[in-house]
Image 1: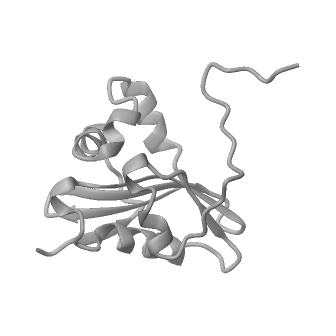
Image 2: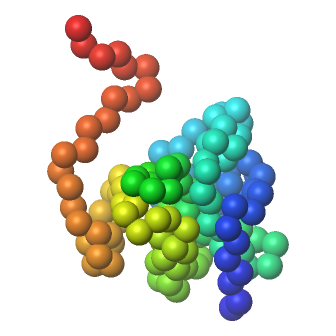
Amino acid sequence: MTIEYKINHPITAEHFIDLLQKTSLGVRRPLDDRDCIDGMISHSNLMISAWDGPRLVGIARSVTDFHYACYLSDLAVDEDYQTSGIGKRLQVLTQQQLGPRCSIILLAAPLAKDYYGRIGYTHNDRCWVLSAGESLLE
């Protein structure tokens, strides 16, 4: 298997949706909302993708300032390709695009919560989320 990694290579909503459907992230992403998926892709400013020929098999989709903080919004690898090192390579390539003081921040999917500590991330229990549709309290 020869996997080709691409930096900021354009992907279609169809590619992205197809990949997410083959991962545990699919149930937590708005796959039925094409406008939202298009926005997720077009407003990400760092995307590392993994390809097996024409097939998108992995993605690290981030929003970053490249200097201080990088929010790794989606790390997804097709279940048929998991445990082959693609996810780790996507993160290494993401980190290589960032400045030396830039931290990677992410929210782990439930099935991946133990993965990140094993590869060097530090757990932080101070994350807070204001969900879509919720308002700040007065």
